[in-house]
Length: 297
Image (tube, rainbow, N blue to C red; front, side, top):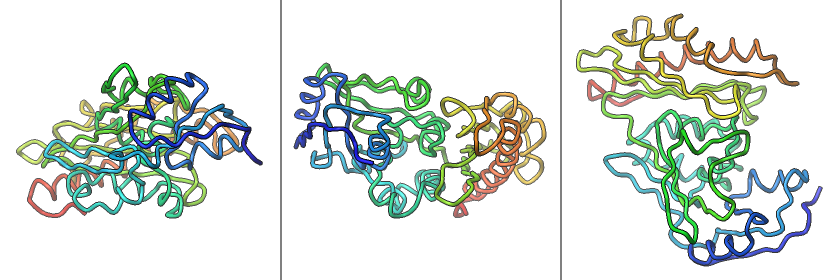
């Protein structure tokens, strides 16, 4: 299938892009990598009258690594971020999750920020941003603002960005020297959207015991569902029960899966708990390795 007719715009600066979005109002869509938007248009699930292609806009293709975390521009490809060694050292969860995103050929074109702006609750990168407590930077002719991940995702394919706003970048906070992370998911075939998935962050105290634990789930709700597991995990030694039944049951009670042609709600709820147990164990091991000055596996 082919998309409906649209007018194509190719701004060269952020200012030009913002002016165009303001001019076309709610009838415009931003084109970055296009790996989510174009299939939706081809299936006639979206029919914008204007496409604003930001592929030629300068300054949106940078990965900036600081002591606080990793800042990713709107035109950074998945594959670029996945292979970025400095970003991986600062925040291993990025590569852990990106390796599950579709296939390499799609990661070569698709953008991490575009995936987050698309706000698909089955996507990996919205969950990563949510569990890390990151934020999204959006701009319009009215100015620039930062939106916390908790406030950005509003529903399936819905975000708090206004139609005339451009998501210029996202910021992923550093989990800390005593932090460990993991990403687990299960799909029918590698590269498909997962039946369920989970991003996990575990923080240790100075005694090597769990100080806090958080998880964000994909595919089991209308938005990435973040669950604070600290009460169920605090004080646990990572090699001795961090993936306890209490944490799993707490998470299963917080998610809201639905049945579809791929899986029942009950199966998704069960699977989410299994993946969480694996994720907590892996994140715990990596937190220990980081706290001891070793390389996180």
